[in-house]
Figure 1 (cartoon, rainbow, N blue to C red):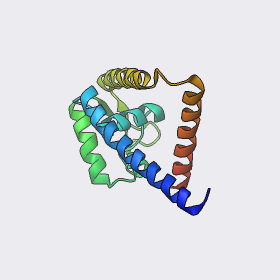
Figure 2: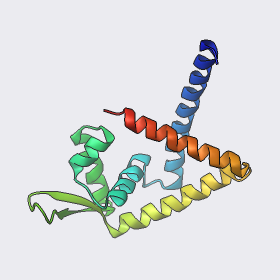
Figure 3: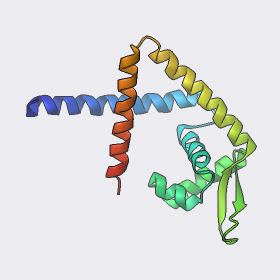
Figure 4: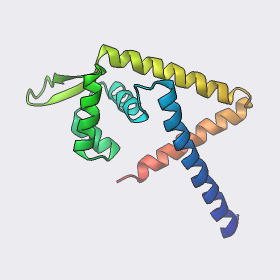
Length: 147
């Protein structure tokens, strides 16, 4: 592949990733109007980590603590997350999914899975497997490149 072809491919990748991100945000709002894409990712992260501090969320998402604080406050108000005292350090509060958060996350996950499944239903299984591997590889490389 020459430099011109490589540049063209990178332009296409950038354009398609931008379209993907826009569509993901719009789809998230349609699937669960009360659960934005940001809220969904925070809830999913809390589930995956089995709880974490707000400062850990800020670090993970590379966001200002005040931005995370506003998101956390909104999720608490909706009854999706709760604060618990850290058993090892009683001065620290750890965020966990509340029952309502577990429920809405599971519902959103089902809706998203159904939507993705519908979009990819006509794909050849080998193409789908290859696409999945490329997404994993891209995200792993992107995560490794973050400071």
